[in-house]
Image 1 (cartoon, rainbow, N blue to C red):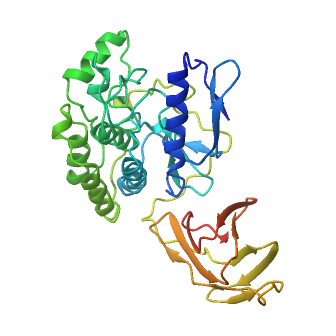
Image 2 (image 1 turned 90 degrees about the vertical axis):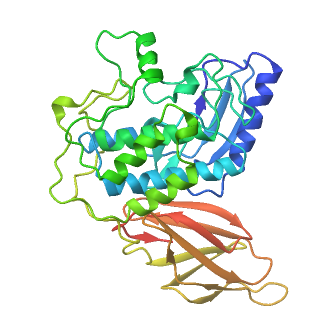
Amino acid sequence: MKVFRVPARDAAAEAQFRAECQAVGRLDDNLHVIRVYDAGVLADGRPYLVTELCDSSLQQLVVRRGGALLEPESAELGYRVASALLGAHSAQVIHGDVTPQNVLIRSSGAPVLADFGLAVLRDHRGNTATGFNPAYAAPETLLPEGRIDERTDVYGLGATLYAMVTGRAPFGTRWGESEAERIRRVLDEPVSWPPGVAVSDRFHALVSAMLAKDPAERPALGAAADELARLREEPPQADAPPPDAADTEPTAEPGVVAGEAPATAEPERPHRRPVAVAAVVGLVIVVLVGAVVAAAGSGTTVGAAAGPSGPPAVTLAPPEPAGALATRLSWSGTPGLSYTLVVTRQGAGPRDESVGSSTSRTVATEPTVGYCL
Protein backbone atom coordinates (compact mmCIF):
# COMPACT_ATOMS: atom_id res chain seq x y z
CA MET A 1 0.00 0.00 0.00
CA LYS A 2 1.63 3.25 -1.16
CA VAL A 3 0.49 6.80 -0.41
CA PHE A 4 2.33 9.58 -2.21
CA ARG A 5 3.60 12.58 -0.31
CA VAL A 6 2.72 15.10 -3.01
CA PRO A 7 -1.03 15.65 -3.52
CA ALA A 8 -2.66 15.92 -6.91
CA ARG A 9 -2.86 19.72 -7.21
CA ASP A 10 -5.84 19.95 -9.54
CA ALA A 11 -8.55 17.94 -11.20
CA ALA A 12 -6.43 17.43 -14.33
CA ALA A 13 -3.56 15.87 -12.35
CA GLU A 14 -6.00 13.63 -10.48
CA ALA A 15 -7.61 12.53 -13.74
CA GLN A 16 -4.17 11.81 -15.24
CA PHE A 17 -3.23 9.66 -12.25
CA ARG A 18 -6.46 7.65 -12.49
CA ALA A 19 -6.02 7.23 -16.25
CA GLU A 20 -2.50 5.89 -15.83
CA CYS A 21 -3.63 3.43 -13.15
CA GLN A 22 -6.39 2.21 -15.45
CA ALA A 23 -3.83 1.77 -18.23
CA VAL A 24 -1.61 -0.32 -15.95
CA GLY A 25 -4.69 -2.32 -14.97
CA ARG A 26 -4.97 -3.43 -18.59
CA LEU A 27 -1.64 -5.19 -18.13
CA ASP A 28 -2.90 -7.60 -15.43
CA ASP A 29 -2.49 -10.57 -17.77
CA ASN A 30 1.22 -9.83 -18.22
CA LEU A 31 3.16 -12.23 -16.02
CA HIS A 32 5.91 -9.73 -15.24
CA VAL A 33 3.92 -6.56 -14.52
CA ILE A 34 2.93 -5.93 -10.90
CA ARG A 35 -0.77 -6.39 -10.18
CA VAL A 36 -2.61 -3.21 -9.17
CA TYR A 37 -5.64 -4.00 -7.03
CA ASP A 38 -6.89 -0.48 -6.29
CA ALA A 39 -5.97 3.14 -6.88
CA GLY A 40 -7.50 6.47 -6.01
CA VAL A 41 -7.07 9.83 -4.31
CA LEU A 42 -7.53 10.43 -0.58
CA ALA A 43 -9.63 13.28 0.82
CA ASP A 44 -6.50 15.41 1.26
CA GLY A 45 -5.59 14.98 -2.42
CA ARG A 46 -2.77 12.44 -2.03
CA PRO A 47 -2.90 9.57 -4.55
CA TYR A 48 -2.62 6.00 -3.32
CA LEU A 49 -2.03 2.55 -4.82
CA VAL A 50 -2.74 -0.97 -3.55
CA THR A 51 -0.64 -3.61 -5.33
CA GLU A 52 0.53 -7.15 -4.79
CA LEU A 53 3.23 -7.54 -2.13
CA CYS A 54 6.66 -8.68 -3.35
CA ASP A 55 9.47 -10.01 -1.20
CA SER A 56 12.35 -7.82 -2.39
CA SER A 57 13.77 -5.83 -5.29
CA LEU A 58 16.39 -6.52 -7.92
CA GLN A 59 18.62 -3.99 -6.13
CA GLN A 60 18.45 -6.09 -2.95
CA LEU A 61 19.12 -9.27 -4.91
CA VAL A 62 22.32 -7.79 -6.34
CA VAL A 63 23.44 -6.72 -2.86
CA ARG A 64 22.75 -10.21 -1.46
CA ARG A 65 24.83 -11.75 -4.23
CA GLY A 66 27.82 -9.60 -3.31
CA GLY A 67 27.61 -6.92 -5.95
CA ALA A 68 26.96 -8.61 -9.32
CA LEU A 69 25.03 -11.36 -11.07
CA LEU A 70 26.40 -13.69 -13.72
CA GLU A 71 25.55 -13.08 -17.35
CA PRO A 72 23.02 -15.90 -18.00
CA GLU A 73 20.93 -14.96 -14.96
CA SER A 74 21.13 -11.26 -15.84
CA ALA A 75 20.02 -12.01 -19.40
CA GLU A 76 17.12 -14.12 -18.06
CA LEU A 77 15.94 -11.38 -15.71
CA GLY A 78 16.43 -8.73 -18.38
CA TYR A 79 14.39 -10.74 -20.86
CA ARG A 80 11.51 -10.92 -18.37
CA VAL A 81 11.59 -7.16 -17.82
CA ALA A 82 11.75 -6.62 -21.59
CA SER A 83 8.63 -8.76 -22.03
CA ALA A 84 6.83 -6.61 -19.44
CA LEU A 85 7.84 -3.45 -21.29
CA LEU A 86 6.74 -4.87 -24.63
CA GLY A 87 3.32 -5.59 -23.15
CA ALA A 88 3.15 -2.10 -21.67
CA HIS A 89 4.07 -0.45 -24.96
CA SER A 90 1.42 -2.46 -26.78
CA ALA A 91 -1.10 -0.99 -24.30
CA GLN A 92 0.20 2.55 -24.99
CA VAL A 93 1.94 2.77 -21.60
CA ILE A 94 5.51 4.09 -21.27
CA HIS A 95 7.30 3.31 -18.01
CA GLY A 96 10.10 5.85 -18.36
CA ASP A 97 11.91 5.07 -15.10
CA VAL A 98 13.20 1.48 -15.26
CA THR A 99 15.74 0.92 -12.45
CA PRO A 100 16.76 -2.02 -10.23
CA GLN A 101 14.59 -0.50 -7.48
CA ASN A 102 11.52 -0.68 -9.74
CA VAL A 103 12.03 -4.36 -10.59
CA LEU A 104 10.52 -6.31 -7.69
CA ILE A 105 10.98 -10.02 -6.95
CA ARG A 106 8.03 -12.26 -6.11
CA SER A 107 8.38 -15.06 -3.56
CA SER A 108 8.63 -17.44 -6.52
CA GLY A 109 11.78 -15.63 -7.67
CA ALA A 110 10.08 -14.14 -10.74
CA PRO A 111 10.71 -10.45 -11.48
CA VAL A 112 7.87 -7.94 -11.92
CA LEU A 113 8.08 -4.37 -13.15
CA ALA A 114 6.51 -1.83 -10.78
CA ASP A 115 5.98 1.93 -10.43
CA PHE A 116 4.45 2.63 -13.82
CA GLY A 117 3.76 6.35 -14.14
CA LEU A 118 4.46 7.11 -10.49
CA ALA A 119 7.42 9.49 -10.81
CA VAL A 120 6.16 11.61 -13.71
CA LEU A 121 3.21 12.08 -16.01
CA ARG A 122 4.12 10.17 -19.13
CA ASP A 123 2.39 9.00 -22.27
CA HIS A 124 3.06 8.71 -26.00
CA ARG A 125 2.53 12.43 -26.62
CA GLY A 126 5.68 13.22 -24.65
CA ASN A 127 4.77 14.94 -21.40
CA THR A 128 7.29 16.90 -19.37
CA ALA A 129 9.42 14.42 -17.41
CA THR A 130 10.86 15.36 -14.01
CA GLY A 131 11.95 13.57 -10.88
CA PHE A 132 14.27 11.01 -12.52
CA ASN A 133 17.27 9.48 -10.77
CA PRO A 134 20.33 10.55 -12.82
CA ALA A 135 22.10 7.29 -11.89
CA TYR A 136 19.83 5.43 -14.34
CA ALA A 137 18.00 8.17 -16.24
CA ALA A 138 18.16 8.36 -20.02
CA PRO A 139 19.81 11.61 -21.19
CA GLU A 140 16.63 12.88 -22.88
CA THR A 141 14.74 12.78 -19.57
CA LEU A 142 17.17 15.32 -18.05
CA LEU A 143 16.81 17.90 -20.81
CA PRO A 144 14.55 20.92 -20.26
CA GLU A 145 11.83 19.54 -22.57
CA GLY A 146 12.05 16.10 -20.94
CA ARG A 147 10.41 14.14 -23.74
CA ILE A 148 10.25 10.36 -23.42
CA ASP A 149 9.12 7.43 -25.56
CA GLU A 150 9.72 3.67 -25.97
CA ARG A 151 13.44 4.26 -26.51
CA THR A 152 13.66 5.74 -23.02
CA ASP A 153 12.62 2.36 -21.65
CA VAL A 154 15.33 0.70 -23.76
CA TYR A 155 17.90 2.90 -22.00
CA GLY A 156 16.42 2.14 -18.57
CA LEU A 157 16.56 -1.60 -19.23
CA GLY A 158 20.15 -1.26 -20.44
CA ALA A 159 21.10 0.66 -17.29
CA THR A 160 19.45 -2.04 -15.16
CA LEU A 161 21.34 -4.80 -17.01
CA TYR A 162 24.56 -2.84 -16.49
CA ALA A 163 23.87 -2.69 -12.75
CA MET A 164 23.16 -6.44 -12.63
CA VAL A 165 26.60 -7.43 -13.95
CA THR A 166 28.70 -4.61 -12.47
CA GLY A 167 27.01 -4.04 -9.13
CA ARG A 168 26.79 -0.29 -9.70
CA ALA A 169 24.73 2.28 -11.55
CA PRO A 170 25.98 3.64 -14.89
CA PHE A 171 26.30 7.13 -13.39
CA GLY A 172 26.63 6.72 -9.64
CA THR A 173 27.46 9.69 -7.43
CA ARG A 174 31.14 10.63 -7.22
CA TRP A 175 32.65 12.05 -4.06
CA GLY A 176 32.22 15.82 -3.95
CA GLU A 177 30.27 15.92 -7.20
CA SER A 178 27.27 18.19 -7.50
CA GLU A 179 24.01 17.05 -9.04
CA ALA A 180 24.56 19.43 -11.98
CA GLU A 181 27.99 17.89 -12.62
CA ARG A 182 26.53 14.39 -12.59
CA ILE A 183 23.78 15.38 -15.02
CA ARG A 184 26.45 16.79 -17.34
CA ARG A 185 28.20 13.40 -17.28
CA VAL A 186 24.94 11.64 -18.16
CA LEU A 187 24.44 13.99 -21.09
CA ASP A 188 28.00 14.04 -22.43
CA GLU A 189 30.15 11.12 -21.23
CA PRO A 190 29.87 7.51 -22.47
CA VAL A 191 29.20 4.82 -19.89
CA SER A 192 32.48 3.26 -18.73
CA TRP A 193 32.74 -0.39 -17.73
CA PRO A 194 34.77 -1.27 -14.62
CA PRO A 195 37.71 -3.67 -15.07
CA GLY A 196 37.14 -7.37 -14.52
CA VAL A 197 33.45 -7.54 -15.48
CA ALA A 198 32.96 -11.07 -16.84
CA VAL A 199 30.50 -10.70 -19.70
CA SER A 200 30.60 -11.85 -23.29
CA ASP A 201 31.31 -9.47 -26.16
CA ARG A 202 27.70 -9.87 -27.29
CA PHE A 203 26.28 -8.90 -23.89
CA HIS A 204 28.68 -5.94 -23.66
CA ALA A 205 27.75 -4.77 -27.16
CA LEU A 206 24.01 -5.06 -26.52
CA VAL A 207 24.04 -3.13 -23.24
CA SER A 208 26.40 -0.48 -24.64
CA ALA A 209 24.06 0.05 -27.60
CA MET A 210 21.04 0.31 -25.28
CA LEU A 211 22.89 3.05 -23.35
CA ALA A 212 23.51 5.21 -26.44
CA LYS A 213 23.08 8.94 -25.79
CA ASP A 214 21.03 9.40 -28.95
CA PRO A 215 17.70 7.53 -28.69
CA ALA A 216 17.79 6.91 -32.45
CA GLU A 217 20.98 4.85 -32.04
CA ARG A 218 19.49 2.43 -29.51
CA PRO A 219 18.15 -0.95 -30.65
CA ALA A 220 14.42 -1.49 -30.77
CA LEU A 221 13.02 -3.07 -27.61
CA GLY A 222 11.90 -6.18 -29.49
CA ALA A 223 15.38 -6.68 -30.97
CA ALA A 224 16.95 -6.26 -27.52
CA ALA A 225 14.52 -8.82 -26.06
CA ASP A 226 15.37 -11.31 -28.82
CA GLU A 227 19.10 -10.95 -28.14
CA LEU A 228 18.56 -11.37 -24.39
CA ALA A 229 16.57 -14.53 -25.11
CA ARG A 230 19.57 -15.90 -27.02
CA LEU A 231 22.09 -14.80 -24.38
CA ARG A 232 20.21 -16.49 -21.54
CA GLU A 233 20.75 -19.83 -23.28
CA GLU A 234 24.52 -19.35 -23.44
CA PRO A 235 26.45 -21.50 -20.91
CA PRO A 236 28.08 -19.48 -18.12
CA GLN A 237 31.74 -18.62 -18.66
CA ALA A 238 34.09 -20.90 -16.77
CA ASP A 239 36.19 -19.40 -13.97
CA ALA A 240 34.99 -15.90 -14.78
CA PRO A 241 36.49 -13.43 -12.28
CA PRO A 242 34.09 -11.22 -10.35
CA PRO A 243 34.23 -7.43 -10.74
CA ASP A 244 37.13 -5.85 -8.85
CA ALA A 245 35.71 -4.64 -5.55
CA ALA A 246 38.19 -1.76 -5.50
CA ASP A 247 36.78 -0.48 -8.78
CA THR A 248 33.12 -0.79 -7.81
CA GLU A 249 31.40 2.43 -6.85
CA PRO A 250 29.01 2.01 -3.90
CA THR A 251 25.39 2.51 -4.75
CA ALA A 252 23.99 5.71 -3.34
CA GLU A 253 20.36 4.67 -3.49
CA PRO A 254 18.06 5.32 -0.50
CA GLY A 255 17.49 2.40 1.82
CA VAL A 256 20.21 0.15 0.37
CA VAL A 257 23.58 -0.23 2.05
CA ALA A 258 26.28 -1.89 -0.03
CA GLY A 259 27.36 -5.16 1.53
CA GLU A 260 24.44 -5.35 3.95
CA ALA A 261 22.34 -8.46 3.49
CA PRO A 262 18.74 -8.63 4.72
CA ALA A 263 18.02 -10.97 7.61
CA THR A 264 16.00 -13.17 5.26
CA ALA A 265 18.72 -13.47 2.61
CA GLU A 266 18.88 -16.96 1.24
CA PRO A 267 22.17 -18.92 1.37
CA GLU A 268 24.35 -18.71 -1.70
CA ARG A 269 23.83 -21.50 -4.19
CA PRO A 270 26.18 -22.49 -7.01
CA HIS A 271 25.26 -20.76 -10.24
CA ARG A 272 23.74 -23.02 -12.82
CA ARG A 273 21.94 -22.58 -16.08
CA PRO A 274 18.20 -22.16 -15.37
CA VAL A 275 16.28 -25.37 -15.87
CA ALA A 276 12.65 -25.61 -16.85
CA VAL A 277 10.60 -25.97 -13.67
CA ALA A 278 12.00 -28.87 -11.69
CA ALA A 279 9.65 -30.70 -9.31
CA VAL A 280 6.73 -28.39 -9.98
CA VAL A 281 3.72 -30.64 -10.32
CA GLY A 282 2.64 -32.31 -7.13
CA LEU A 283 -1.05 -31.44 -7.08
CA VAL A 284 -3.46 -29.42 -9.15
CA ILE A 285 -6.24 -27.66 -7.27
CA VAL A 286 -9.23 -26.08 -9.00
CA VAL A 287 -12.16 -24.39 -7.28
CA LEU A 288 -15.40 -24.94 -9.18
CA VAL A 289 -18.58 -23.12 -8.22
CA GLY A 290 -17.82 -23.55 -4.53
CA ALA A 291 -16.55 -27.14 -4.65
CA VAL A 292 -12.83 -27.84 -4.26
CA VAL A 293 -11.52 -30.60 -6.51
CA ALA A 294 -7.98 -31.98 -6.23
CA ALA A 295 -6.35 -34.16 -8.86
CA ALA A 296 -2.97 -35.76 -8.35
CA GLY A 297 -0.66 -35.76 -11.32
CA SER A 298 -1.91 -34.40 -14.63
CA GLY A 299 -4.10 -35.21 -17.56
CA THR A 300 -6.83 -36.15 -15.08
CA THR A 301 -10.59 -35.65 -15.28
CA VAL A 302 -12.27 -34.60 -12.04
CA GLY A 303 -15.83 -33.74 -11.05
CA ALA A 304 -17.81 -31.70 -8.55
CA ALA A 305 -21.29 -31.52 -7.13
CA ALA A 306 -24.01 -32.05 -9.70
CA GLY A 307 -25.56 -28.98 -11.28
CA PRO A 308 -28.83 -28.49 -13.18
CA SER A 309 -27.40 -30.08 -16.32
CA GLY A 310 -25.46 -32.88 -14.63
CA PRO A 311 -22.15 -33.15 -12.82
CA PRO A 312 -19.54 -30.64 -13.99
CA ALA A 313 -16.17 -32.04 -15.04
CA VAL A 314 -12.71 -30.58 -15.49
CA THR A 315 -9.84 -32.13 -17.46
CA LEU A 316 -6.38 -30.97 -16.41
CA ALA A 317 -3.63 -30.93 -19.04
CA PRO A 318 -0.01 -31.62 -18.10
CA PRO A 319 1.71 -28.36 -17.03
CA GLU A 320 4.17 -27.01 -19.58
CA PRO A 321 7.36 -24.96 -18.99
CA ALA A 322 7.03 -21.36 -20.15
CA GLY A 323 10.68 -20.37 -19.97
CA ALA A 324 12.92 -20.84 -16.97
CA LEU A 325 10.77 -18.89 -14.50
CA ALA A 326 7.19 -19.78 -15.38
CA THR A 327 4.79 -22.68 -15.95
CA ARG A 328 1.77 -22.74 -18.23
CA LEU A 329 -1.35 -24.45 -16.85
CA SER A 330 -4.38 -25.32 -18.93
CA TRP A 331 -7.58 -27.26 -18.47
CA SER A 332 -11.00 -27.78 -20.02
CA GLY A 333 -14.30 -27.93 -18.20
CA THR A 334 -18.06 -27.97 -18.37
CA PRO A 335 -19.31 -24.65 -19.82
CA GLY A 336 -20.35 -22.05 -17.27
CA LEU A 337 -17.79 -22.87 -14.57
CA SER A 338 -15.74 -20.22 -12.79
CA TYR A 339 -12.24 -21.08 -11.60
CA THR A 340 -9.82 -20.06 -8.87
CA LEU A 341 -6.17 -21.10 -9.15
CA VAL A 342 -4.39 -21.87 -5.87
CA VAL A 343 -0.56 -21.77 -5.95
CA THR A 344 1.47 -23.00 -3.00
CA ARG A 345 5.25 -22.66 -3.11
CA GLN A 346 7.25 -25.17 -1.05
CA GLY A 347 7.67 -23.71 2.43
CA ALA A 348 5.13 -20.93 1.90
CA GLY A 349 1.40 -20.48 2.35
CA PRO A 350 -1.15 -20.81 -0.47
CA ARG A 351 -2.07 -17.88 -2.69
CA ASP A 352 -5.29 -17.93 -4.66
CA GLU A 353 -6.14 -16.06 -7.84
CA SER A 354 -9.54 -15.90 -9.48
CA VAL A 355 -9.28 -16.56 -13.22
CA GLY A 356 -13.00 -16.43 -14.05
CA SER A 357 -13.97 -18.52 -17.05
CA SER A 358 -10.40 -18.65 -18.40
CA THR A 359 -9.03 -22.17 -18.96
CA SER A 360 -5.32 -21.35 -18.91
CA ARG A 361 -2.89 -19.34 -16.83
CA THR A 362 0.87 -18.77 -16.77
CA VAL A 363 2.25 -18.69 -13.23
CA ALA A 364 5.67 -17.66 -11.95
CA THR A 365 7.71 -20.65 -10.73
CA GLU A 366 11.29 -20.92 -9.55
CA PRO A 367 13.60 -23.72 -10.78
CA THR A 368 14.40 -26.50 -8.27
CA VAL A 369 11.50 -25.50 -5.98
CA GLY A 370 8.40 -27.67 -5.49
CA TYR A 371 4.89 -26.31 -6.01
CA CYS A 372 1.29 -27.34 -5.56
CA LEU A 373 -0.76 -25.84 -8.36
